[in-house]
Length: 314
Image (cartoon, rainbow, N blue to C red):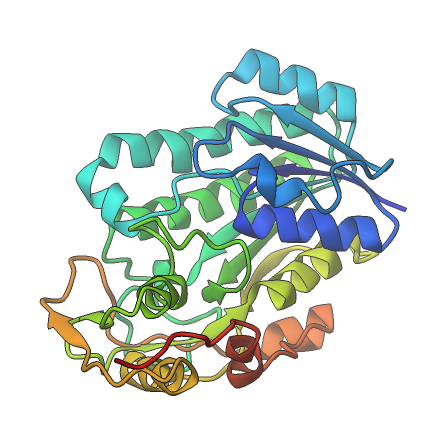
């Protein structure tokens, strides 16, 4: 049994990961300031005897250090941070605080507590508009947004300080995650949740750009399973891993599939492309499969079928 601390534990990915870790018999603590996370995400396991939750801002270093010492985790999974590309562009200072300085605070606390492994939630945004699709862990990193730049800086901090300070540094580059608990009402949520929100309201889909941009969609339960594998691998374990399905899907094709499911005949509305959006994104999952033994199991069609398609066509 491992003792695991999740920063951002009340968030979309963090809560699913906590649920999966608890189901596997591990002891789990979550810390979250509830800026984007919410206690409702914790409802299915809030009373579990292996779960503890701390409402705390990781940037409050003194109190965060106290929590880490109290929990005394074997592994820290760092999900806390600014999760929005548009917000990182609008407020680069906040992006730097939440996605770079917070990593410094997390590492300092982990080292002082003798944590064995630190797992950093990175992003395919570090690749930017690389044309070498599918992207593997050695593909060029050319981020096109402050968010991607901060994630790349976070990777460098975790990998560099892990080598010098003795903890096992692991960076997981998530591609486009979708699934339950992803906020539909946020302008910063993923494209699947935004599409679902409009379809359920009987509104036309809004597509930024021409819709031919591609993404690699991976279900949040698959991501949670990858996190459990990375946290509990007997190791030693270190390095960067793509967490992806390996399938490249155009946004137009995603839109068409969801429109069929929801019986919508409304033509999509096309808006100008957004700053920081990449044109093509699909990952190579080979390294995660060979070293972690992880492969995505939930195909996009099966994942989308979980959402109730009950809108009535006009």
